[in-house]
Length: 258
Image (tube, rainbow, N blue to C red; front, side, top):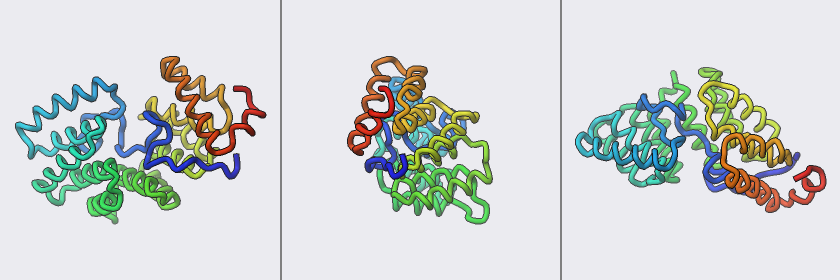
């Protein structure tokens, strides 16, 4: 697969609904403001969270933790512009707060305002003592703007601080996938899957990378362990469509059983 490169993916998405760069430090921890993330919930669960948090936020819009959680839930629901507005209001009442700044950077990135997001995240980060969560977000923004070597340097810096962080290895893997370095992408995604904090999205990202290498049965087995049959078939069709658009399908089809 040397020389293979993915199609321009449109910001973070490799496979719709599954493979996206992590912007949050923990995809399952919703108890901490800085780690607020609702993206791994089902659609109805996300909507229920938005409804609950909207009511609570209306009664106390200056509450930092509540505002960060509400903005995260809105992002998960696809309401990125409203998420930005919530964080802009919170920035006005919590100027200089690094947690609010980091959350604001995430919201801006989700809305596609990458240059502004990078400035906000950098302003919220102490260069003398950065935390790995901030570096995770910075790396994701750099990857989304095509600055993959710089993103990987940022992830490596973060891994010195948190070598067992699944999300860092997951983002590193997706960064390599974006430039077609699928062997390195697979290695990092396998590390991510094996570490605490991993979730089904990371496993699906690994399946995607395996599929792009023509290892369809391995990819299908992972999808089948996580998804209903119709979604398994849809994901496999999507992998093949990516390969077709890259003029790789005929070559792989001759080498690997479908």
